[in-house]
Length: 222
Image (cartoon, rainbow, N blue to C red; front, side, top):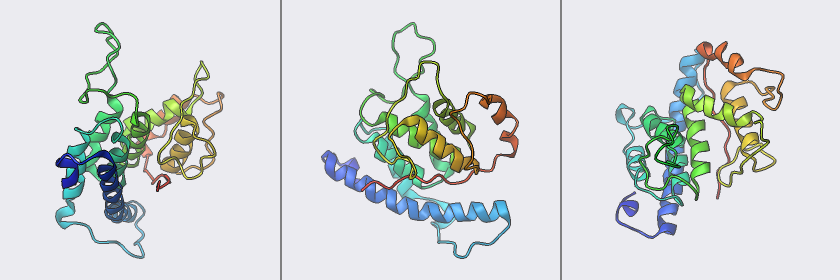
């Protein structure tokens, strides 16, 4: 992570972020197992050690860099933060999905941004990873972001993902990846978000109080 701070060129920084993602995945697996044990009451076969007081200096450094990185690095940075499954990442991930560019000074729907240029590059992938990470932490904003993009829209418009797609996705379509991720997080592999016969807003409202998140299966890009 020091390499990211010291102005290294992009390829070394992206390699460092990949390494950080693998380390945080190791730490995150332990936290996830702890969560499962608490939720189900069943002990895990093996719980990996976590840092003292459940702290992660590496995650903190990744988040700090995340607020400074550019459009080409935001997705690998967000994915690394997601891998930790740690509450520390919550505000950072919320910022990633909550920011949007101001199209005009009079567009009241546009939100202020903490990034100079939160569009293009890998931003679409970054917001997908952030939404998945939030949903896995039990944050409703992440679930709703995925819902909004898994459901058919009236214009039939879809977008594409290029990094860390869902393991079972057959295409790069954002809607498919969001739907598969929601099935994982909600623990219901039979859900079909392409149907228009279900009011998904009402469906979620009736179930969100009992929501107990599961982990989503995203690919580990090489």
